Image (tube, rainbow, N blue to C red):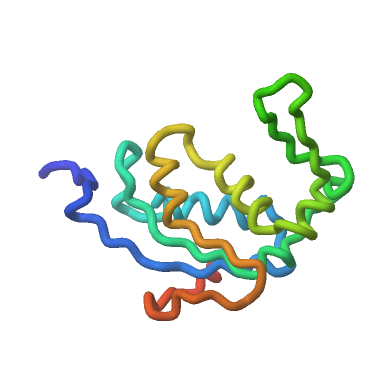
Length: 143
């Protein structure tokens, strides 16, 4: 008996819809990262990209617990002297909730080329409407 090894030829990818309304941003991001990576499949292989497609809806209704809205910052640097930009998460969640969700999910993926490929299968929407009905996504509500 041989050990199963996932590769491009024997992976079946399904589409899942995650509803972030009223749920903590981090818990939704952790679940999305697990599905993107394929860790909830029995045929998970760490060195292969065997994850599924994930659609996150209602990103603007995700909740940050505690004082994170006022104390947590999204920081990025332009590379020039004095080029540090800081945005509070309160402002980020009001203007670009999709970016906040994407940053949280990206931080929970491994730092390699598999994560880059996994992020191409991630679709985040501010409201409850998405345009992937043709793919027949399944609603994920195990948790």
